[in-house]
Every structure is written in structure tokens, then in C-alpha cells.
Image (cartoon, rainbow, N blue to C red):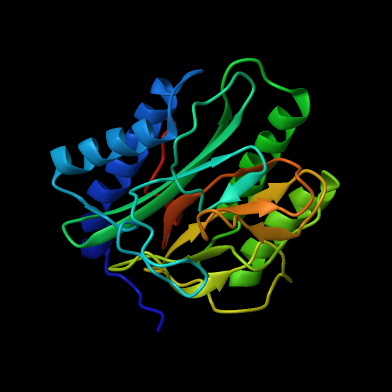
Length: 258
């Protein structure tokens, strides 16, 4: 079911968005060569407890995962692009890291993701990250009242195709509210003018993610959660939770002024 939020409810979602933004910025600043993924999870857990928030991940057990996730943040490295399970791995020089984080504050959820390179970057990794960020910005700009969900999808796809990338539509954006994943689904490819109307009060997570040389995924057999590229190429992922208002999209997880 798709729910529209009142202006007061959107205001009530701001603390969750702010906390997710601040946590991702803190973790991005703290992750260096040698940082263990389990330490990132512990640090995120500490920040959640300190804020009195609730993790959306720890008990999450959808059909595409292997039981409850059991951690509070997704840490995807290099060829892993989605749902990366934190494990005993120390970040290496040149690793492409994606952190995906969702929590509930006072019953309202926010969800966001950021990709970055630790240490010495590869040019192609920086270009891939920049493409996901441009696609996210394009998708947000297209999220205008009076439009359609397909407008967001088409804007994301235009950026990806312009960079020569193929697109997987199995996982994409989604509604956000009292729970982390709701309707409508927002694929990263679609036709403008199609789909659910974009009305003021709609709150969604927009999340373009791309792989260097494929759009095929495989599930990590060790944890049953981490989604990796089928050909071993690297991936990047950018995500924000936004609310559609009469004046246009409002980014609830904005990190630009932190």
C-alpha cells in the first residue's frame, strides 16, 4: 500500500534523516586502510544506541536474504554492491567501499547509502561512483509533484546509459515511512510518464547502483546476503530518502552541509 504523509509527518521524519546522514558522514570519515568491517558495524551500533534509534537491518529477514541480517549496516566492498554483510575483513588500500544504512527514529525510517574509495583510487572507480551520484541527482530532480515514478527511473537510466553502463532492475528505490521497504518500487530504468503519480506527501528512497561491466548479480554463498557482480567487476551505490512536497523534492538524508 502506498501512503502519503502530511507535512507534519514529513517534519517528524527529519530527525531520522538527519541521524542517518550524520552517521554515514562520521563512518566515511573514520574508515581508513586497516579498518575492519566488524568495527564499522560496532561503531554504527554504538551511534544507534547513543541516539535512541532502532536498526532496520538487524532483524530484517526478507525472502532474498538468508535469515535475519544480524548487523546494523551494510558494508559492500569492491565487487559487492548491495546487502554486504559485515565480516572479518580489514579494508585495503584502493578498496571501493559502500555503506548502506537505515534506522528508525521515533517510529520513522530513513535510508541512505554512499560509496567511496579508501586510500589510492582507481580512476574507473571514481568515475563509477560519480556516475551513481549524478544519476541520484538526476532522479531526485525528476521527482516533481505531478510527475510519475517512471520519470525518476528514466532520469537515472539516461545517466547510466550515457556512461555506457547496463542496468539491473531487480533492486532499486522504494517507499519509506514506518518501515524501510514499501511501495512504490522505483527501478533504475523505466519510461518517463509511466507508473504511480508523484504526489506531495510521497516519501521514497532513490538508489541508483551500477556495476562496471555487467548488470548480473550473484549471492555470496558464505553469508547468503551479499550481492556481488557476476563477473567480478566493481560496483557503486548512492541513495537518499526524499519527500515530495508541493515545492519539489526535499532530501531528508542530505549530507551536503554536514
